[in-house]
Length: 203
Ligand SMILES: [Zn+2]
Image (cartoon, rainbow, N blue to C red; front, side, top):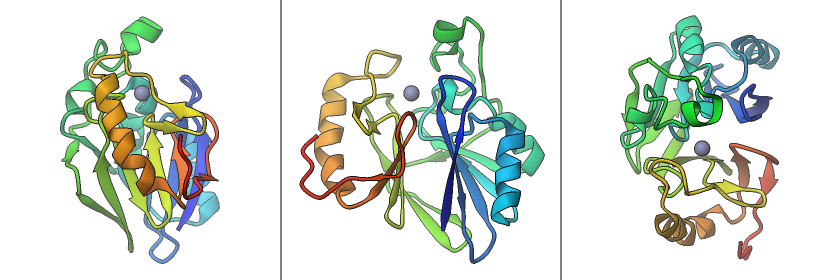
């Protein structure tokens, strides 16, 4: 499996392209980067088709190019059940607050639940519900990589003061999630990416 990081245009959100070398199948996590950048990365990797668009949560800066990408590739959009209502609601997804204009994803999403397994070619991504930043934030586990969205960053964790955020819930999530991240390589929604969390890390 290969992972490429692309830079989003809104709030410099990290977009990730995952490609399964065996089958040429690909998926995109949090499409914030321009569609042209994503498609040329697919070409560079020699991957075939983007089959899935995976959203770690429903905030606007993680889904700005989801509709355009879905239209170009026929890929389906997947988001957790609790965050699905954020996709076409500019208040709830933060776009009206941050940009004073709505940024929406109108594609009808497939809804993910905790424990779901999402195939991408010969790879399988495991979905873990990690509420706190939003009610329906998820992390995607595949091989030794974890896409953590805005739940865990290199230097901390996501804010909990936006719609659906809850500090107490976030603390509970982190208590159970952090041990599961030990020894894995993290790909967060913002900032540094591709770093390993050593076993025994406490924060
Ligand atoms: Zn967010």
